[in-house]
Length: 461
Image 1 (cartoon, rainbow, N blue to C red):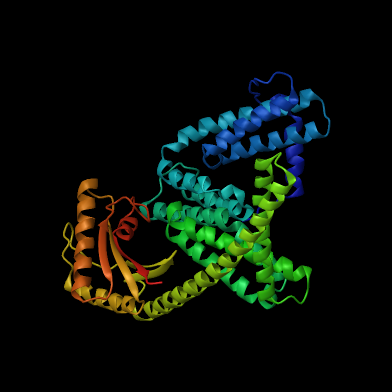
Image 2: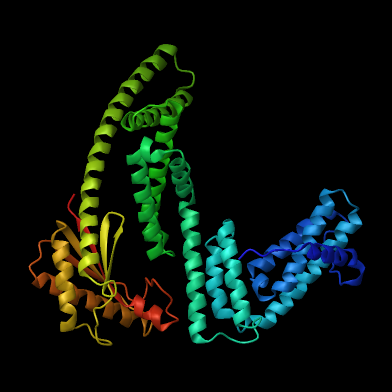
């Protein structure tokens, strides 16, 4: 929530800053150099913010930030070095006091601060919108805990944990896909839906796929990297195609695509030629000309091969995408989201089974869960699936070794049951135990979410 600052506040701040002699000043190690003093206190402030002092002792931290900002303004305005150093020293003293106050409050907020720290590490401060959301959550947290004078109730702790996790996910999405989002928005405003609809649609679909992959596993770059790279590549292609169309109005999209591909080949050829020129150095001109001719012929051949390969890959990807979309549409109709979640993960389709209600410590599939497996198998059968890997996961309750054994046994039980249905695809299974959580194991809801069986479906190309 954006806070409105009244003119009276500026007057009070001016009075406060004019009375620097009446407040404590910290010792500065930078001597009488005002620029070094500002740098020293700025570093001290950043370290305090990194330790989350800004949320634990917000008032003192904000006052210190105000004094530091005033010192910077005075320095830029050419004020006396003494005035700048005084304000910097007061700012540092306030940050020191804020640190001490934060230490006294930290013990009651350690667990929720871990969730907040994860959001900060994901890059929340790189987006003004996310910073405003963070401030709102922090304000609510201070209010709910009465400035950290009391601990959160379990249900409140869970609610704040979810808020910070959601913010962390948004930060990862912004960090990884912000450029793609900007490109899509920029060229949507420039009428891309009419000028380059296929390129725009591909960029939008790849962007949404990557966003969903991050949403499922925001802390697992290895799981979302491929989709993110694909989304960024699609956004770059949209950018290049639209730049061609806007530069020469009336150019059809398919012609623009050919131009872009040719330009990219030319860029590669120029790079290769530059490297070649550097390596041959002082070779005779006739040898250089001969090699350049050979490079040009090879480049044309590669260009032809690349065009054919790209077209083939596009057709294969489109075919797979159609089958995946049909399967996801069918699953949304026939399977409750409380029972299973179906989503695309790169070149695979994942069925996340939430309701295989194994008894505690056992791997026998309950009869009540078999209709769900039958239904999922029927959907997979329409995909022309090649391989289904059954992945078992547990929460963190119990030893790591037992959890791995239990998850493997459960995955094997599901794979065995699917095999009994005389499926037309290969089956494999693996147990990951507690090693790949998708939610916090500190709450009952999180542990229930982590106890799952995933079916990772690879289809024939």
